Length: 144
Image (cartoon, rainbow, N blue to C red; front, side, top):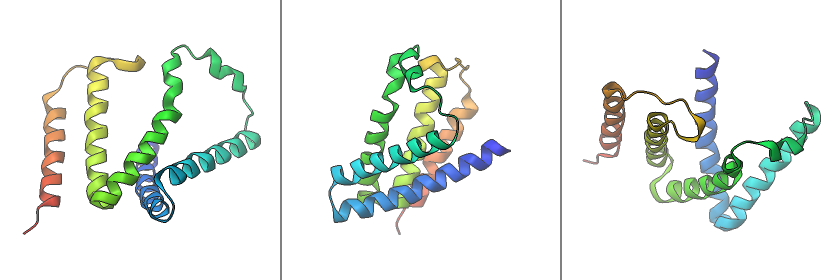
């Protein structure tokens, strides 16, 4: 149950953050806004690290698959693409497409067993769920 609650909070925070970042971008620029997001996130992480466990930062260089250290780089591009999609489509349409994309890519990662994730068997019901979600976007976007 805890996982569901955290996932719902995460989705809500992503939508709010996207709206905030889009507004900051309108008043500054894409790179200033994105830089601020990453810098302020870094500051929060440093503060949290100082007040919690202070695990060794050197452990980062002992990570087995070095490509997994690109999460921050990907995070910067996530921020950029969320800002641009929300600015072009509005928060609701952008969020729906973002979630569908996340779901589709996550399923492919599971099917192929990519990036150290356990490989899962193909299931038609999951594909049907994805198609129903896509149909939901079409219905939501439908204008009279």
